[in-house]
Image (cartoon, rainbow, N blue to C red; front, side, top):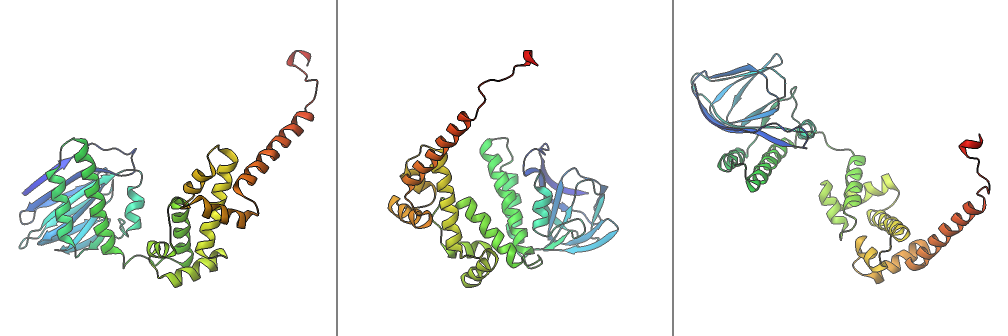
Amino acid sequence: MENKIVMEFPQENDTDLYLNVFGHSITEPLHKAGPAVKTFYLIHFVLEGEGDFYVKGAHYHLKKGQGFLIEPDTPATYISDEHHPWRYVWFGFSGRCAHDTLSSIGLTQNQPIFTCEDGDKLKKYVFDMLAHNTSDHADHYRLMGMLYLALSVIANAQKDKLETPSGNAYVNHAISYIQNHYSMPMKVEELSDYVGINRSYFSDLFKQYTGMSPVKYLQNFRITKAQHMLTISELSVESIAFSCGYQSAEAFHKIFRKTTGMSPNAYRQEKRQRTLSSQETVNNNRPDYIVTDDEL
């Protein structure tokens, strides 16, 4: 017998992440669930008591503060302890990014167990889900927010078990951040904080792998974006400056001239002149007489 509260929602695999199910259970001694399979990823977290989890031929005895993962289409069984039956919360989700999300925090069916000292937070988030279980748009976004918060708690609990990124991985993360945020003010400290290492070590790694400092890379990337905008758009130089992360047109002019050897306006005029010249060359070399299908 199981005393439970549960809410279920239809599955949507065409989204990155989608919350399918969540609930809270107070089980009786020797309460058994399974063997059964799910169509989504399901995470249980033990709030009190203990029990046994069986999956893929493995047996795990779990207590308060531990949790387990069940992957889709994977038979699993879990049984509450005879003398100390467990109480747990759970949530299940699916979507295009579900597998990669779990892998990134170190949970797979081959490594399905985690220990979390912030269990009160997981309980709080699931109970918040239960309190906002309507089809209202506001509640939908709140539910998804609780899902991400719960995953964040597990990710934080697992971080010491995850493989330490290589130096190149740190640099790649920083480059990705630059390319997605170049239009915003940015300092080296922000980049080093983002990848999780101190500024001095980060700067050394960045130069080792790219041949330039983070500041120089950011500057070059911004100028490359500005050159593209000057070539293809009618935006003012001032608008392009702000779009590329510069706080003033004057600062942009100075760095652009230093990098390219000309002003933004001169660069735009030169690129347009080259485009016109190329078009004239194409027109001049175009044959006067074109054979039609009827003449073949």
